[in-house]
Amino acid sequence: MPKTEIGIIGGSGLYNMPGLRRAREVRVATPFGRPSDAYVVGELEGRNIAFLSRHGRGHVLTPSEINFRANIYGLKKLGVTRIISISAVGSLREELKPADMVLPLQFFDRTRGRVSTFFGGGLVAHISFADPVCDTVVDALAGACKASGVVHHRGGTYLCMEGPAFSTKAESNVYRSWGMDVIGMTNLQEAKLAREAEICYATLAMVTDYDCWHADHDAVTVEQIIDTLNRNVENAQKIIREAVRAMPRERTCKCGSALVHAIITDRKKVTPATRRKLALLVGKYF
Image 1 (cartoon, helix red, strand yellow):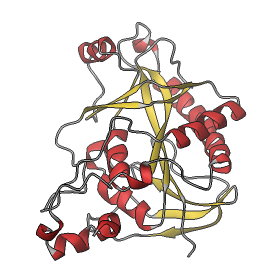
Image 2 (cartoon, rainbow, N blue to C red; image 1 turned 180 degrees about the vertical axis):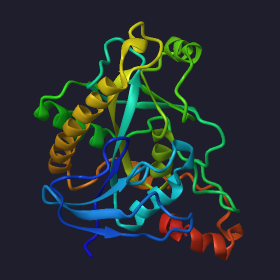
Image 3 (cartoon, helix red, strand yellow; image 1 turned 90 degrees about the vertical axis):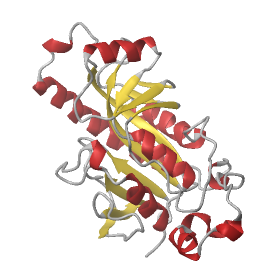
Image 4 (cartoon, rainbow, N blue to C red; image 1 turned 60 degrees about the vertical axis):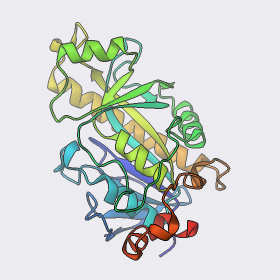
């Protein structure tokens, strides 16, 4: 099986990738348990990709139930070096309208108790996370949005909440006062783990509606939200195809060497069991 190079993680509404040639399902075993679903690998726009449904097909996993470590480790095992992550979000800004796409450059963590690292168990590493997304992937997504004629906004902060319930009005207004831009429930953990796995990562955030701060929030029906979600998914599929086609084949960013100075533990103190468990991630540094 040829190595995949680009991973696509599909969020709410995006459970498959039309146009994938020679598609087949691959189940990947990981030291961290089972990924959300089988990976669908194949060829898209002349590139080998792996698609994963974050919540599982049929949307069976809450955000808190997702095994983020297994999902990212599985993509790494398949050879993925870049991830495009699709996420349905609520807007915390008037100018970020439903059906717009947002390419956030920052994340803010409001989750509780989720595991966000591969490390521990006798091996300590502290990655740099000041700039949590890869500019190369963001560039490709921005160009793809423009080519697809989809309104997009580059920049801003994705606040990652625990869920599965949505925010109270008090919370939503506090997040706005903090300068947050969109709100979702999944991408912070993915971004951290991708950086630890030395995989480039960026989010394509699909705005489904305004969060509950907005005066018109209560007037929006479920049918309207679903209609927006469906339009978003159709646009996201176009954008993904364009971004995959335009993605540079060579990596010149620093994502692929994120662990060079991150491992703090004395190599002699790392147990053979821990080295075996994390060999895919850190083997080249031992």
